[in-house]
Image 1 (cartoon, rainbow, N blue to C red):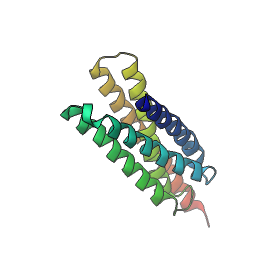
Image 2: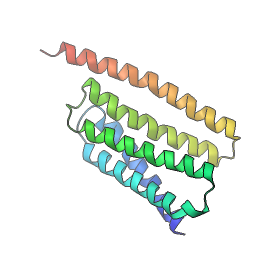
Image 3: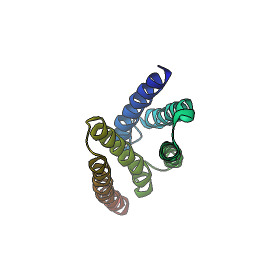
Length: 151
């Protein structure tokens, strides 16, 4: 039961982080909401993994442990972004990475929960990551152009 509660809270705060992050991507609106919901999402994930740790096999421990580490990296990137001007190329890069990772996680979990074969789950994650890379490159390029145009 606690595992389900923790995973539900993880998903809910992850959703808030994604939505607030999309708004915070170009401006400071909702940046604090994005940051703290991201922190909460990672904390709930870590708690859920810790609660199940004794029941996980070695491969699952490595996989879920890696997800927690990725979450911590995302929090670190968001913390680094809070000191930067909104819309600057580096800010777009840092916040954008976390948004791609959050969206990728939602897609992968949706495909996995849909009963798809593991190859399709992996492929969907890779497609979203690659597409996100190109979207992020375009956004960063626009941010660089805006920075160069400003007097």
